[in-house]
Length: 329
Image (cartoon, rainbow, N blue to C red; front, side, top):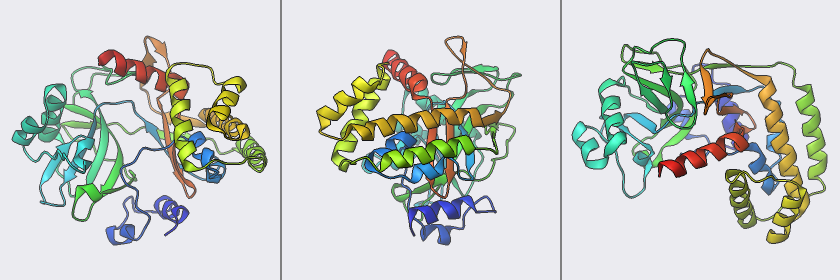
């Protein structure tokens, strides 16, 4: 099934969860990195210019850590918890007991997984979410953003779920799709899934996207090998807080022997993405700060029949995430 048909089926699913046999027929989505919309334009895929203004589903991207995967192991039928290492091809770390956790992990990650094994509800499904913290407080900083809840959390653990997986026999073959239904809180677990309202009038976004389509007709898009290298160079600029102006774009184009108009289109699509923040409104009462300064949520994940991408202020969060990780290391 073509990619657009896959997302159309996901988006129009009314029951909250796709039936497994039907899902197997659709395009597989391995546990891969969700792309930024501006990066997807570099190889000439213009679907994202329709994606911006299509009727969409949106979830808030919570800045938690580590990522927790839990559910029923299709290979054994047993409940398990783990990090994203459960999907490793070689050194697989699936934990079906506290002993497994002690053998596979140590330090803070092991402590978190022990709590998750004790308190996460048993299920026949497979989920992934970001760990925010243990209950007993109302302020949490799991990664870069500090979250302030309106009251003290009584639950044992706090998780922000965002993804569901289907694996027929082996977790290494798991395919993923955005979480379609809200998970019910338990006495022990608070699931944080803020609702997002999308402004109904996206005419301004459509106009700029139509302009971007015209610009795309003037571009000579590079081969994938060059695209991969340019993505790394752009990420490096963002992580180091460097301004990406036309001089930078021309230097990158010369370094990679590519059409500078492709990079100018990249910057235009990035600006469309940033404009989208004005049209997305989270319905929650959680305060977000970085170093005492109020910020929005890290971003959003939005999907519709044209694809799935993340809307993140990279200049703020990618820069801070990089330096937080560097300082922790």
